[in-house]
Length: 246
Ligand SMILES: Nc1ncnc2c1ncn2[C@@H]1O[C@H](COP(=O)(O)OP(=O)(O)OP(=O)(O)O)[C@@H](O)[C@H]1O
Image (cartoon, rainbow, N blue to C red; front, side):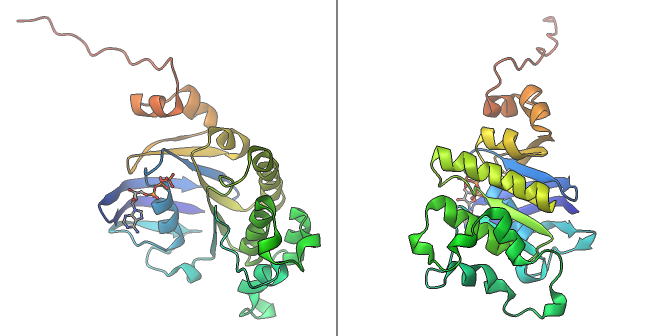
């Protein structure tokens, strides 16, 4: 579904180095790493908001490396929701559909997404009157109404209080199971990885340090750096063979 091949991206003084991984259709894939590791730059390169200096991005076998964002059929949702304050919730959700012909619309109707997210009662309200959790659901509904091939989420839950965060996490899981949409999410929250991810990629200092299921990455970190990041105490690397002097 998504194939990222040898991706190198320069962003100011920062470089994302030779990133290669694949995400299967319907998979929930998480990019995990400390602050400044390059997760957002990677996500935005997949979305077409940065262009790589080397490497390729393929979506369903199509090389989209040089395509602008609007031709990739990808939706991206940020932690700050980015809703239009002067438009009602319903207008926010249907915003991207205004220029589409009926014949181009496929899959589920936006009202089904509204039902799945339980936000039907909010349609006539303006974003300013919504709670953080409600805004995030509306932002998700707006992204999904455009019927993307893939959903990108940049720390979608990090602005929420712990209780709302867990509730929205469950909603996200439910939505993913219902729609089967290929999803790539950025986070530095370990709990979210275990609650949502089929597989996780650990990004450290602009490089991909390990990819695997959450269990594989947390129980068997491949390097001292990954072990340190995931907080594994019992990482053991046999000492190098000591050569006798002389
Ligand atoms: N447009 C830009 N111009 C210059 N440097 C940038 C730009 N965007 C990102 N960077 C730099 O690239 C590096 C990686 O940033 P990025 O936002 O991808 O990190 P992150 O892993 O998503 O961190 P966080 O978890 O804090 O969001 C940072 O050092 C950042 O300052």
